Image (cartoon, rainbow, N blue to C red):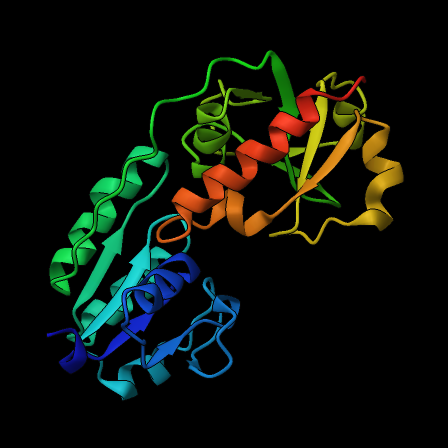
Length: 233
């Protein structure tokens, strides 16, 4: 069944997962990091006309990654669109099970028991100029909390926060966990980040891409955080 179905994926996590399942989309976004597959724009600005012209059997989107207006446009062109909604580790099991059933793929996943609290509070920036961070109901927060890390702003009612410089300067986390995406934090930002707290760079894909990589990502981040806890701040 999977071999006969043409699929467009507008979600990097889904593109990676489909390929792990042996299913190659006919098109995906430029953020999926698959140059061998036709690109149909970005997650927030897909080329909906190009997608329509491909006449795929299925288009896959995610409510956190993609825009409602693009979803509605594609539906209006009589395309079958599967909308996922992943905002936590628990969603990975349920949402990917739905997708697996479409392709007759076996999907068995469990994140395992959560870690005990590491008594570690982290600030997780996802953008700079302006500063932005993750809050409640986000996959990244869910993953870090599963690993025993408390995340600043995780008890808020908003999924994402924009922060003024003066607010950031008053934060007092134990550490900064600076991911490599969506903003490419790196060594050139270390001076600014260290003004907030001791800073550690982490793989943004491990933190934010869910699906086939989740189990291994949990192990990699767990090992890195365990190393961090051994350091003397």
